[in-house]
Image (cartoon, rainbow, N blue to C red; front, side, top):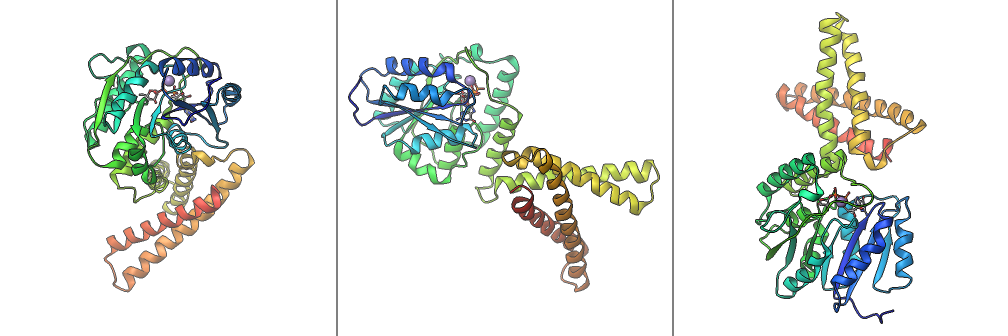
Length: 364
Ligand code: GDD
Ligand code: MN
């Protein structure tokens, strides 16, 4: 067993269901960083497969290894942030816990940081790098689209802004930390968009390996979160992401309403008043479902609480709609605003009301 010395290089390893990969990971990091005072911080989101226990078993023998187990939380980006916050090392890195990243790059990353780089990014897209082994054709196309989108909004040139394998110096992390969104998978993008200045950045090529054990956690929600991150940063962090999602769902609700109205009144000749009621319920129901899937995915209602939530949501939206109509009517009557603006003001008020009530009463 090694005597513990203060770590100079902290390797954060986000993990979800990576139990079989934990021991090989530590071995590989130890071999790659021979002679360096490193520490490995596993950040596990309470994986059902016992990842945390696997990490602790090693930590019990090796003081360079630690494990943070988060309960009731999910998220790759926030796992990285919390891992780095838990370390005092002057140099920080993140590497996937599934052995897909080439740990032999770590010493060169550290070297570049020591020579003054603020960030060192493991890139699949510079000469010598490759992703073919690790990606299906679909994932490769998706990754390229994401990369192009990210490049359009970034303050620095990075060939692989979607990389999940990189290192940075502590001052740079501390500079960004208070303003990181911590949503989704793309912590590097989050950092670069938060820093909003050209950082001294070095890219090192590596080959993305195929996964040996376990499976990828990238799904539709993760992609939505990616778009959310870009939107959040585009808005300068002033509009909460959840509100943005809620408003977008509301917009979709308007389309559902019109479509339902078209079917009920236009096609089936249901009288207009009754068709309006039917369309309203359709829109509210679809909105409730979408909000439950996306906006409040982390507080998703299931079972009996789903029906309770739906009933409450109808009530909240009902009051919101009444307020909308009432406020718009008042503004027009008193000549404060023209009808178009009054209608918009009423609608905006309703979205804010619905959001506030949904966040506090429906999805508590
Ligand atoms: N703590 C925690 N919480 N860890 C997570 C979570 C989570 O919610 N989701 C995923 N991880 C861990 C995984 O266990 C793995 O160690 C690592 O984060 C990457 O997740 P994968 O699910 O293996 O991602 P991938 O292989 O599809 O995506 C890779 O490619 C991207 C590049 O396009 C990763 O390297 C990403 O980091 C990278 O950005
Ligand atoms: Mn992976």
